[in-house]
Image (tube, protein in one colour):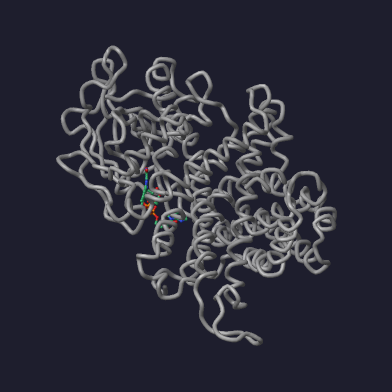
Length: 579
Ligand SMILES: Cc1cc2nc3c(=O)[nH]c(=O)nc-3n(C[C@H](O)[C@H](O)[C@H](O)COP(=O)(O)OP(=O)(O)OC[C@H]3O[C@@H](n4cnc5c(N)ncnc54)[C@H](O)[C@@H]3O)c2cc1C
């Protein structure tokens, strides 16, 4: 993690705001060390037991296993929830470039647990950006500190990817909004970790226009506040049921019914009918966060598979007497190298995205903001799709016992599966990427990214000690991505159906290429800076990862680009009845 952080130059680029906020590099290093300790000692050990115990709904109240409750209490006491929160409201104001690696550790250690602070952070950011002063005064500090948690309530049975179909409503009654409606799949929608829960709910006000333009965002507390700001009477919210699901069993996924007894007291956040824009603050945070979930869970799967491959003995090899550890077998090494290099590429891409978000805030330029927006669906879509591959390879390396629950490889595989679905499916991310982030600006942001990579490729490849063949593969992948970009711009203008059918290959092409290019950038940066503390063996290993990536994984970017250029006409024209 430190290798990638240093390689991307984040400390240098953010030196001024970090120093102004009192953060030296050594202090930030301490933060990473402490987070690692907390993740290893408190969160990772309860991951399997919490999954086995699961959550339950008892008399309308969701109960969380005691071991998760105790971990959460310690998490709050140690100040972890407030890491990136606004300083005026008790936060520590750390940039994403530092909070993202810390969050990666929580998600590696215990995904079900990590979802509660993840959504709370996103909720706090939405309130900070869009809430009025009274709401901020009342709710922001408890959310930033984690003594209350936040949720995100978008989905209804008929409104999943298409939020224009949301029906929940909020009426003004005697000066207060009263909210009614049913929300499904609400993560950490109810629990007994904290004494209040603050729901952020999309709903319509009377006479609002149809579709997404008529959505408003409301803050709806589980308990209304007493005069002294503490939780008072229960609001009109019922936890109807808990979903039984494939993974993340220790994270309650709730069906919530609002307003069965006259209407839940709700407060408008932002302007009426501007709910989606406000919710987008939350969703963008959450999309980056879910991308980092893919990275985190993949890392744990890799480490687990590696440990098993070193210990399990099967088969022999030419020149060996007796059986060897399976890590010696070429095909197992292929799987491990695939996982390891994909992990480092995902990490480099995700941290680069975080750095662009921070630079956008610090510099206030549209260019960084556009680049961060370009990278967000890529990080979400590519890292979570890649996590499917990494966790399935981990299971494969375990052989038969991987399929048996006791080893834990199956849990990682199950838990990773949700990441390509919630916070917008891969199809939705890809549509956003190809249409809004590429076609809408005529490909300008994408071309800017590609030309930056092209400008650095020769120097990075030389400094990283990449072979000529590997450098040529990077060059070829860049050319292919450029052709894919041109083709998308042209087809979205003339034949949007054809372009939409290849949005996912476009996302996968750019994710594969940019992840690899950022990995290469980190290797080159360390090679240029021998005094940076990166050990020679470690650097040689990372250079080998870049070489492996170029040979074995980067060709996928070209294949995806070919599919984009070919276009999705065939799937678009096949009559529905012929499927
Ligand atoms: C465990 C879990 C936790 C969740 N947590 C939350 C939460 O906290 N808050 C919340 O509000 N929601 C939450 N969700 C809901 C989640 O965000 C939705 O399930 C998701 O957005 C997809 O919506 P859907 O299930 O209705 O699928 P649909 O929208 O019906 O999609 C079905 C398929 O059609 C595709 N599709 C649909 N529309 C398009 C399109 N326009 N272009 C291309 N493809 C399309 C999708 O990609 C998908 O493959 C959670 C879900 C789960 C399972």
